[in-house]
Length: 303
Image 1 (cartoon, rainbow, N blue to C red):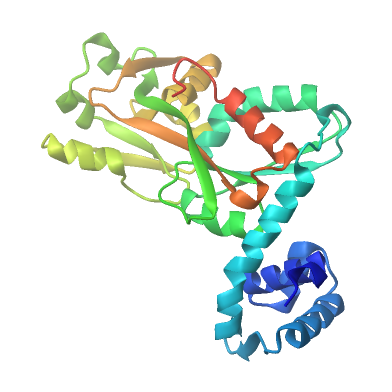
Image 2 (cartoon, rainbow, N blue to C red):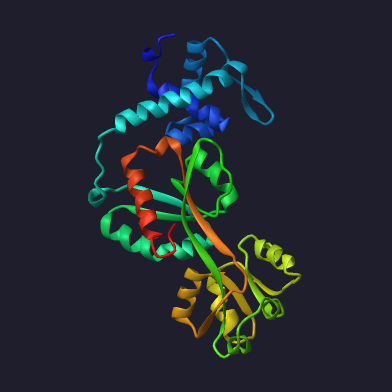
């Protein structure tokens, strides 16, 4: 088969079908109507002489032939789009584009101030969307194209996802000013003996810090579980509760409440990374957006 005779849009239709396993979702992925996608599937079947996808109770499963050619088609599309973007310019000042970042709870708290300021100055006519996201959902959302980048604590991702560390932020202890623990050096034992506020968007009642405390022979009591960092100042203001938060979040909290900040007596940090699908690596607009996020993350604690 002469690949030069194949319409690029037809290859993109195949790539979308292989990813989404459903005509409607595949159509939405590349901006086609459902009838147009069904027609593209018919043309693909004629072109490759194979059904390519068969209907099952769970969706459209690719045939052996489709599984064989899927990585080749995906790689070809990436090379073509990279070539088309080579040397292409992007002007943020005149852009009307929408840029979407999926962000973990803490990442949004840490970055939104600098990011919003720089974005509105450099791209005043563009739109910035920050969507709530847990790190475990990053790969799927990037594959589906529902977000341009993921910014969160990220673990191992698929080979199609590129990632780099944005910053590492040490955790500190925050409490109301005048709290008894502010009067002397905070030890691990004294820290563990307090009643704690835990920020947990997913409702988890313990985390990595609790596993570290076990190594010291200590356990802490979580007296209050909240979903966002916004709740922390109010929780601390009228009580002897304490919270353990990344230092950037602590600075924001202390700027708007009578809060004291103390060093955490164990070594524990938050790591925030940025991830993107490799198909967008060479897109000028997306490269600009990633650079903007990197700048927003800049500071003394940037690695």
